[in-house]
Image (tube, rainbow, N blue to C red; front, side, top):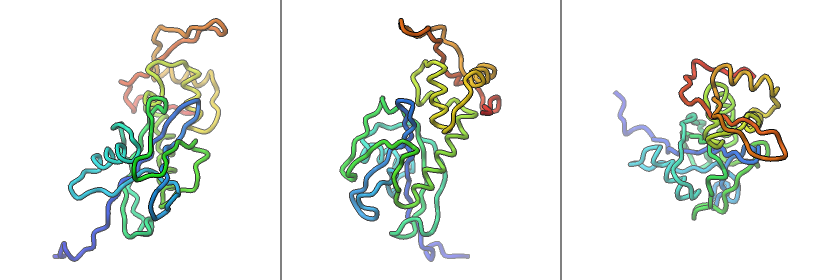
Length: 225
């Protein structure tokens, strides 16, 4: 039987892909590093996981100490284990991603970062480590997920108009959507529900407000766009 102590143990980290939405733009939160490797370069927020710490506890520590953010909902994305992914040695990362409304959060750089900043997903700078791969994986997951789950409720207000929802989908998917087809498909499967309220204003015709049907089971819904 192999001796447990004869194996070299890799270090464990967790990296966060925090997506934000504001002004019809999907963005990702990046951190400018104070120390090597990739000093003064942009990366995803991340940290080594302590011996007595769970991954979720490490995530909350990163949010508080590096980004000045409260605890937010995070979903595990994938494990990245390329042997050469970190120049410091053998490091395995378990990545998470989150969806937030930028207007509801104020990210600030902690003591371990020069700066934190939102970048539109189609304008992100070169990233250190393998963080471009992690980001691309998270964006692909998000684009697949919005087709079968009402993830938009993390990014929009409780009630919204159909054009606002379509703007969100187009910013995530990266291509325009036929307006009438989009509305019909969402209503046919019960993905959204009318609230009975309308927008107010003198310049435009009042628009109906909708809300997400959070009880809709994923197996009952797939949006083919």
